[in-house]
Length: 146
Length: 146
Image (cartoon, rainbow over all chains, first blue to last red; front, side):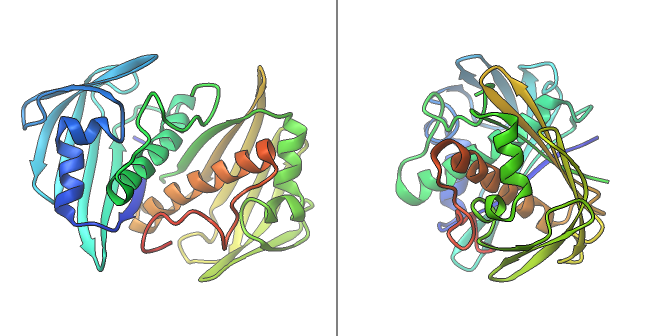
């Protein structure tokens, strides 16, 4: 099954990156402003965008190291997939290895989501490094699919 | 074998996008300024960056529709892989379906290249829509690996 892979480096501590990934306030400032729910293990976080959204169940949350979500509601192609963030420190950078895994087929929507994830991860980097991300609905438009 | 997938939409004609993908001048304005070679089918284009570069043999070039390169020299993980651009028109947009296929393993370098390709494709979009891309060495830095 194909996966979406990304790697960014953020000049910050793993703790700061982990906080931006595991708090409603942090997530709302780089992914989508319309974020609510329980970001603890076993909780469900609801991310909403103009065209729809995703409900993520938190499967694993290892401070400053690892976060794994399962998509429990959203577009059909996403349901049951996992979104994984692995953090590690390299010099002045916290490296984020991102993987959205378990897609059934490399459909055109997966191509879109891959590019879109890249722009959101750059938003996460910008949030932590400059204090200002580009979450939806002010996210970078990449195509007619937004 | 895992692939890198991306999708962007450019508000322009497929012909304009194809030109940016198949001329030395076009390529130099969104990927890397240090580009030279023969962009015709059977030719080899040399793309150079500060840390190294890629030699691409042009396998297919179907005007306004498809371009396929084979990596004939560069980092070991890239050699023998294919880079594919498929173009189609959707309303005011030319959609670019991008695929870098044939990676042996999802190594950390592949995660990096996936994110980096996304930023270069956004550079291609910006070049065509605004006249100014962000090719290397003025490309967007995403991490310690640049």
